[in-house]
Length: 159
Image (cartoon, rainbow, N blue to C red):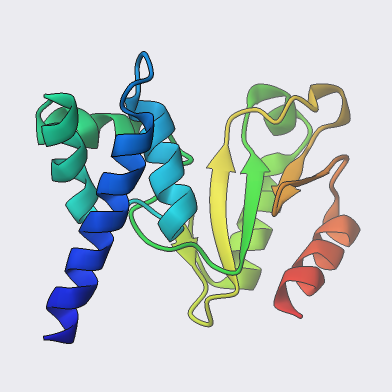
């Protein structure tokens, strides 16, 4: 019984978001952003609810969610670490740093550590090309990363 109530509550909250934003021109992205803000991710049930409200197919909504890297299908960890993988950062050594981060955390891209502390995400430009390699931790930018900076970042998210 509790599961049904919870599912009804999720549907009601999603429907409320849609009702608030569906009047906008091109409302799907604002709706998806708000749903993710509300839940921390886009629940699977949201796809059909949004599709029905916007007169779209579930596949169209799914396609938008999977196209944009910031939308997630599962809750993120307490901290989200985004490492830039664009060309400028690659030329300045982001790939070895990425391998080090993945090894130290024991996870791969789009995964969360078993303790729920960190989700690791690749991004393809943070706008810090002149200060590469760069990362973003919980919305805070970090530039000119090296092994020392990386250790400090990882210590911060693991505390």
